[in-house]
Length: 278
Image 1 (cartoon, rainbow, N blue to C red):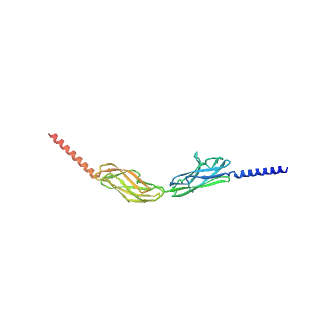
Image 2 (image 1 turned 180 degrees about the vertical axis):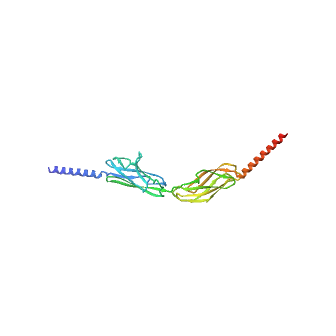
Image 3 (image 1 turned 30 degrees about the vertical axis):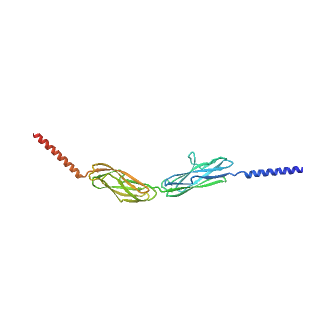
């Protein structure tokens, strides 16, 4: 009996030891977030979309609450990878061999372009004691934009052959950075001259400057419509305007033409009068 009791005690101790060893070797649940592209670049006004992988290894399905905190004035959303819907939590099954993918969208302010710089989004996911945090970064670069319009908004003007005609132009900076050393030039018909005053300008963000273009058609230009191209350009932005110029002949030439017509008509009348007397 004593020997039997000893064997039973040994068997019980061995069983408890194996059970404890099995429990000790059983893996714990793990969770981590990652992304291939934690930093993205874009010009001011660009939206940013980050794909984030959620890797969960556990013994039972869990629901992870999601929260994204972005910069002030920006709109930050967490979306499902498919379909494209905004979400606040995601359920991940146990023993999943591939990660769950979600999307973090960062949209710029609606009424103003953000200043160039770095903007950070913090994504947090939590299910019970399992939690992780991931930082995403959007790098905003300057946007350059320049527009050129006429004072009236029309793309046509009139000029007299051989005489100066002044056209007012407006240059507007539509970007997020100051534009310096904007030069002005023109493609024009042969024998014409187009001069700008001033020849170079600088325009601040959102500002408008005025430039005068002095157009002089060739002195022998025939009355009619001519096309010219006015250009404003710097190393970062440019714009051009196709301008139709209607050329008028000087008044004196009009009278000369009338005089010639009168002389020709008088000569014809004289010829007919002489032939009639014969």
